[in-house]
Length: 458
Image (cartoon, rainbow, N blue to C red; front, side, top):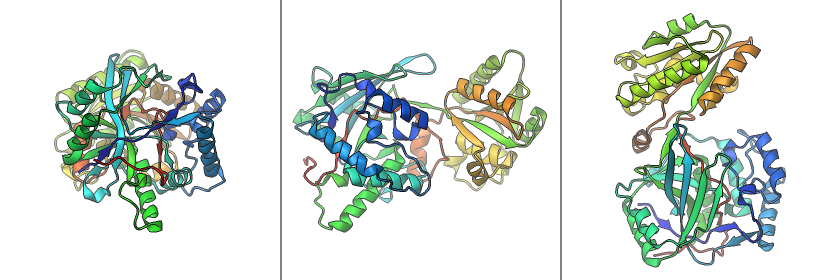
């Protein structure tokens, strides 16, 4: 099944870059234009100069920026700003972080190469749709620079935590690096070079599939890159790095693995009162209005009741807040709703039980009568993981906008096992169904795809 191998990672030279916090970045797809400006001002060696922010969801035009990134990458290596480890390594990558619920957790994973496999092979399994514009952009960057600048976040099953336990016993005494990100999360890397441990990990994954948690576009890009490499060289060696992709692998049973919800701020065209909204939702939802208290109190109470419903194993439950009238309701799905709904009845059972599917297909498309294409074209939905920020944005829009009615829908997080079930059934979740937190930092490790590189074989 999955082929896992060590590699010679490229990383920032601590003798040249004293403050790694100034050069590593969040993933390219969450960096705004304003964020990009701030990152560029921090340090001229910022990763934003290599792992370029995607500027197009449609056709990507090559304005020379890919070649400029390649020249910077080569220059930084010549200057020893970036250095490559001398021997193949598997890296332990831990993140100590603050969960939004107030707890402090540690997510443990490894960084290694994983052999590329077409999705039809069932070795690497997706759960999200990809968009051609993003893939075109990433492909030009990868092929021009002959490098992978960020890791794909994937899951695997390891109930006894055998991989982590084995590698922890033989890891280097001192971390390779340790940094704090802007959210006070601590990222730590250790090297593992012990031959027996590396071979054990390789053997462990021989009967495992891996599930993409975050990075579907990057993985699909790597598949395209390999296909094009094979066209140019049908005899591409099996140990060529184009046959592999750099991944961060975390056990789905890891106690530090967290998935956060992504709430939806829906802009309903025209005017809709809270009573009209309630009437629409009552088509298939039990609607309970939360009364009294500030807007923050209303939202907190809705979230608490949603969590209670989720914990008890009941049907999907949502919150909705109408900022224009300062009214909040708990929405609880009824047992017969799915079978009576025109938008849900024909969907596989594995999708019918997902909160994000019920919200997007039933509440938004059927009850609010907003088609997906219309929402995309007219920008009718914003996705926000922080409920406080979502509340602020909803209230602001209710004051400043007259053309539409902002409605804030709150979700419970998608469960990890639901992600695996959807992937195993070859189905796809709606956009923004999962938010694995925290994000992996870009720039801790890079992977070269040069012809001179050879992937370690066992």
